[in-house]
Length: 588
Ligand code: ARG
Image (spheres, rainbow, N blue to C red):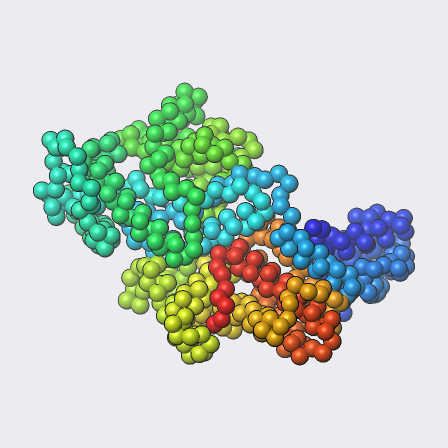
């Protein structure tokens, strides 16, 4: 469906053209003086030079051509030559009528769908999920949903970190604790037990213990490095342990992501890319891209236009070991082979920007991707506590995601019980739904690249720019509609009519901006634009609600029109929050 702004611009363009001017001058924008008008066109100002005419003369001619328009109810020329515009109420009503009919409220699917891989989540196996991984999951999930809504083929890949030193550390610690386990017996050739020799709880304790020990004890660290090396070379017992660690850990990760309503199409991992490394490295050598530098194998990626130093991309260390960079390059090889994506988007902490710059340049230079394959890095900022430092527990430790969710839910539960709006038995489930909106909206309403302060009190508030406020608005609409139905009303009857008052018109104008907003949010990979939009819609709705009699409306036709408007508002808001990755309860 054509965007409202485009409808308005077309009307102006035709009027410019009819008067003998360039139709491109007819561009309409949102008014910079909302107290005076809704939209404006500054084309006459721009045309003045070109046509050597006073701008208001051009504007007057254009306005005269708009005399019979059904699109605008007000066209006013103000000196020196602005054209102030108000949309005709009936035109707006019919635009919303089309939105109701259209699929996805008028959002047009991409004519040429792209295959897009989104690399997000990125947890490290066997390390507890902490808040650092929260942002990647929330932002990536939202962009995935927005992309799909636009009709693209989006593939979400969790890209587990499963191949690093953490595995060697866990194996080493296990060996110190239980050297008798069969996994450590190199002469053993039988089957390994099915049951893992640890639970997730133990695993989560083992890793930090081992990590701390390795920092103090050089010999221990050597042992862990050796174990990592042997694992990567396929030592049987270690591979079996690694499998156990993976199983226990992935089950736990899935449970956690489920709580966040975040899901992945692929559960690929760093180790999956390892088989691609030897050929890739060999080719880079053969083709002259890779060369030895102080024993290490590197590829130069600096470019003339660089303003800061971009160090060479290291493929192999002097001991032949591969690195994070090598794994990411090999993952690109794998993805191209298996999925042939048009685009790969990485949603990762912005502190990894240089790493990705190197990887992207190297991949392009060495031809791992096509010229047309887009490689994008969406680097997000840090989630801070109220003290402005990275978010920690009250005791100053690393906050586990599970605990963070539990804290929010508890706070929500308290508020919901105090409100007495839901039955006690439903309060817990409602708290979970609203709590998730608090976390996700709190994160997504900030531009991803910026650091932000995670403020439990603010995020869980029912007032202000918060998830719960948005849900509260949706619940309000739902409950009016429920009451209407209980009184025998039919929400499918009637049609949206011209607005009764200014606040209703404002709500209608906001709703009409949905397709344009979704398109922009996708283009800019910017879920915060969805948040800003629904905050405007929710505010517009609430003003309208306070100024307008809805169920008490005497005129039946008017009442039915208001009901249709409510249904549309609910639809637009619910679709929007779905793009953000949360949903609304029926009551709260
Ligand atoms: N596991 C990594 C980390 O925690 C993030 C992975 C991001 N994705 C990637 N392809 N490198 O830092």
